[in-house]
Image (cartoon, rainbow, N blue to C red; front, side, top):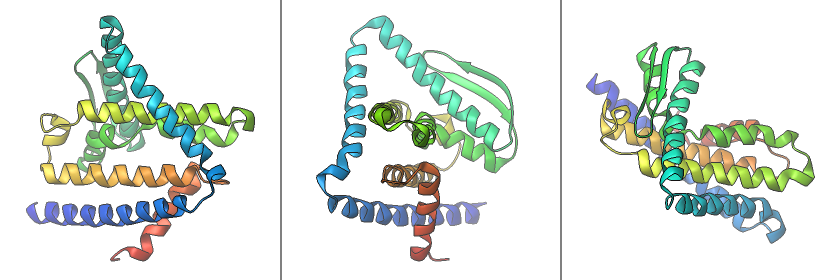
Length: 220
């Protein structure tokens, strides 16, 4: 078991480094683009800023803040549930309160690992709107990009408020393993989102593109 954990941590660390390098190459490529090609990225960035500002304002209202905290908890448990279904686990119960939530499901240890850590590194709302993006008419594309930015801001805020050693999702595994996986998957998602915003691209091609571009730098 110790050897397996060591190998898993090592492979995830290598993956994180490869993704970090890929993200750097993407950043260099973006810096070389003309300003007109950066409009979509600017709109998404504006969406992130809008959400963080709205969250800051909501935090000043008691009922609004409580409702937002409930929705953050709901989204956390919903991500557990979605990944449980995608990994063929059987879901029994779902509960979300203002401070805590819980789902119960059955399945293998590997699917439990993916399910447990999913809320910290899988922005499900962002992926949903990226999937919708190719079918949106051009005149409304700016709006979907704002919404994508809002969902990114939402996930960033949830990550900041919900991630910590106290979380049983995280501390049920060696902390180094949990955090290495989370960092690697966050880097992967950022690479996918950057690629998906490119002209003529979509989230499905971007997913393939990121995986493909990792291979030349891998040790396999």
